[in-house]
Length: 248
Image (tube, rainbow, N blue to C red; front, side, top):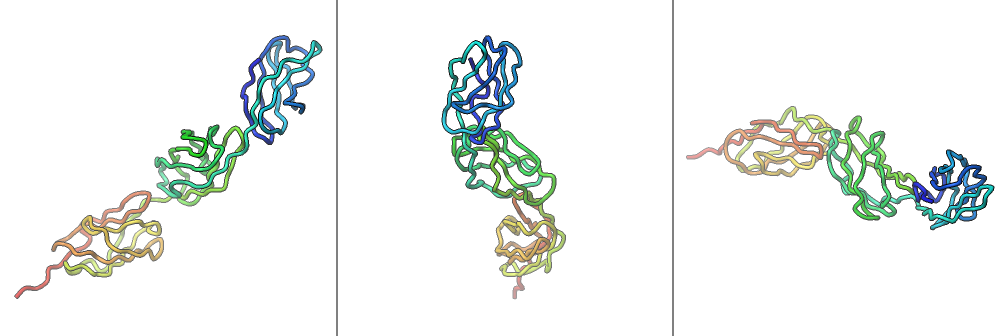
């Protein structure tokens, strides 16, 4: 006599389908010593019921006017616990693969990022791998994991739009580097790198529209300036010009 699903939350509330023979006139379904609720006799071979609260492994039995069936195992599963995400932010377009670490994750069926859900890959009971779905807009959303034991919230993932670069002031400086440059644009508050002609530069985030950087040494001429955040990279072609010093 199989039962599907054969596991559910310790808090109860799991709807199960029990298949067998001579099930007409079912009067009770028990999970261990506890009565199930919402028992429905679907047919002579099928009964549905909602599990009560419980813990561990219990035997499920069906009682009819003809007697009580042999028990079949049902496993109570605790709610999942999430400890951290391998990355807490990414592009609003989604597509990044991240790891979720915690406990009780082996029966995970869904991971929701705000209103959008994705199907995870179970690595182990303590880790899931999931491809982040696209977000509705930039900003933080709650992350929830659903398992046979229930749904657990508590972590936050922040969707980020790719940066843009509008101006550099000043737009030129000596090849020796050391020029303090103010870069303006959008989505700059999550900047992870500023580079001049591919060479990373020291930088400080001022706010969402402003970053301050100090030019590294470079060869004379116009070079591209790039600003990178977790969502992508903005390139301002030829935006800064290195000036050669005078010679006598």
